[in-house]
Amino acid sequence: MRTFLRSDLSLASLAVMLLGLAWMTAARADEPMPANLTLRVPSALLAETRVVNVYVPPGYDSKADRRYPVLYMLDGGEKEDFPHLVEALDALIKSADIPPMLLVGIENTERRRDLTGPTDIASDREIAAVVGGSATFRAFIERELMPLIGTFYKVSEERSIIGESLAGLFVIETLFVQPGLFNTYIALDPSLWWNAEQWWREAGSRLKANAGLQARLILAAAGDSGNSAAHLVDALCRNPLPGLHWTHAPHPELRHATIFRGLERDVLRQAFSGDALAEPDCSAARAD
Image 1 (cartoon, one colour):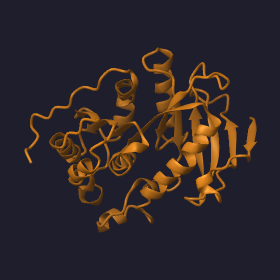
Image 2 (image 1 turned 45 degrees about the vertical axis):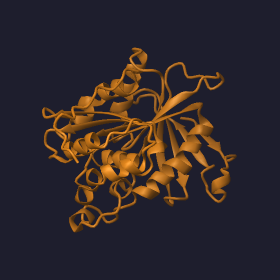
Image 3 (image 1 turned 135 degrees about the vertical axis):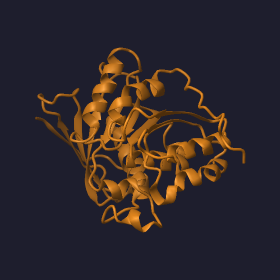
Image 4 (image 1 turned 90 degrees about the vertical axis):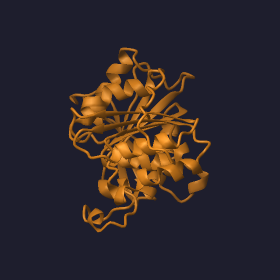
């Protein structure tokens, strides 16, 4: 196992950060997944070191001029969702179903803290000792992690994010509060019940406030997750934006616990094959 140390990174906007210090550790040869590297990223914003797993596609050449899109994934630890998603991504790239890209998986420390926004609901606050830290976690991704990935790897301006459950909630929240951070948002059965279903209730006003939005959204819902996703679809239908291209598919045959593995190849193809997204069914949307 090799270890690399870099201490020459600096960001003008974050002069006092320790971002420049990162350890990169090659994955074990016996890992049942495509080869990847593990970064240990000290975060000044989160006041902790975060583990980040990075996959680079076949044929990646750091000396060539080509630059690659990046898919950021939440729940991205090797004991979380990274192994099965990286296998799916690697297979689709090798079969030429989607273009080569990097996958950056962010391992959790305090998952419910990082993936949730503030809440006024007492029962929400009972799910963990600390909740409501999504803004800080998003700042970590934008201000610390993305610049680091851009320093180590030849990346393009094309950035996407994928998450399921509370991670899907974070994806939807990010689309509404910082829509320019990613180009493509993939939310699998997002936990839209959070804070009295805030995000579908606020969707109309958030969209109107971002009339120039340019993004793509892929939304999927399992059969055991209530009506929150349908309400969000209704809100998206009633507040169309020319620059927001989105699609939605209910999957009553899938459960919350199985939707990620069940759909990952399909949503990766939808997101990155280059084909237009299927038009959402807005025939039942209520009029304002």
